[in-house]
Amino acid sequence: MELLNRQNYRKLYVQLYDKIRKKIEDKEWTIGFQIPTEQELCKVFNVSRATVRSAVLELVRQGYLTRQQGRGTFVSKKAISDKLTMFVTFGELMLGAETDLLIDVLAQTIMMPLDGLDDKLNISGDKHIIYIKRLWKVNNKPILIQETYIPFHICPPLLEEDVKKSSLFELLEKKYEIQITGVKNYFDVTCLNADEGRILDLSENSPALVLTQHFFSGETQIMYMRSVKRPGEFELSIECERKTT
Amino acid sequence: MTESKVVKNLMIDVFEYPHIPFWFTIKQAIMVIKKSIIETEKCFHPLAILIFDEKYNLLGTVTMKDIMKGLEPRFMRKPTEVVQVPDEESSLYVIWDTLFTEESKLLAEKQIGDIMIPAKFFVEPDDPITKAAYIMISHDLGLLPVLADKKKFVGIVRMIEIFDELSNVILKE
Image (cartoon, rainbow over all chains, first blue to last red; front, top):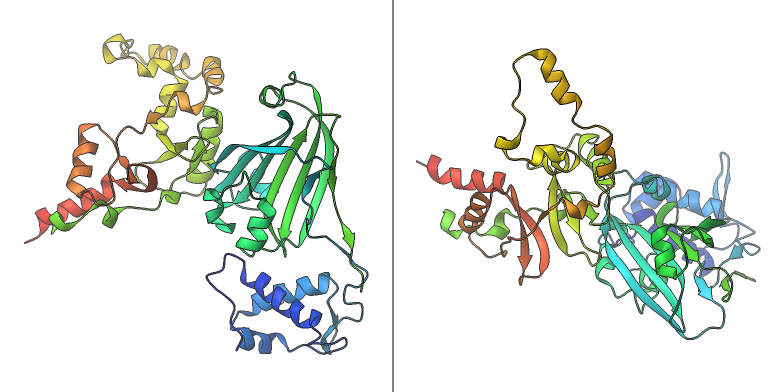
């Protein structure tokens, strides 16, 4: 029996997803291999059928597995070779070649999800969320306000982490082993409210770029981020890399 | 025995209560109460929300009573200043219709930090529960924050659990 870590903050099906994916990537399960049935996987990993189903569905969705009606589930011939896969800095917002970047933590506290945040994070309205507000400064000039919302149950220790020096991505992925498997980015233009204008040293209603990002681990949304950037001067980028076989 | 009971034995998790930062408006606090308490039909006592600063330090608490006072300042006046409630029903409507009007909607935009009850009093996890009871009764509080090393907010102790524990002493034969 291969046990999953029930103390881990990551959901069981995401852990199972990783285990099966590793078997495919390590070629323990080769292309065309018929994977064990749901019932067998339940026994092997000591998890419920719902957990197995969610993990397998995600692997099918990502192209690692294919299902054949009446026959079973097989390791896909494609095995994601042509899938766009993100780089190490998976969806992380970066600031061009600038090196003199300073980050001020304006807030790191807990709140309840209001103003549609419960829908954005796909949680119920009575769930606590960690709220982190940071200001990016280059040469002491404020350029970007980044607000991050994470359901508290996803990673409780994040509340006490030093988010001034550490990247949220690194903390989530490396320290807490919450793997980010998907990100949806939305760009828009906004007018600054009074508070944003004050922080960015611009007048209220000044135009600014707004990037909203939804981060997923498997099918679970783990983080919602809203970044407001002052126009001009500094370029922002999000790197992606097409994974080759 | 009650003598051996300390606050940490009765302490409840802070996440039993909704949290909001001080910059939320009264209106937002009302929405939190609706979503976290009324719609979920949670009925704990006292019904309150916890107010924090930007570094997750507890600043105070707000109950529904505090919100109603905040929205209608005339509720804040001492009894001697309040208009006498008339006997006749028709006059009653005149009084009540002047409360919770447009002015209250404007007041609802105030920060919750302006109307909260500051968390001036607290206990430590190893304090005896009688100390917590004394502070709560002396200052008319329904709950008390529990701070470890006078700094880290680790839990809440409420009158209902303290009452339950102390009443056992009385009822014990």
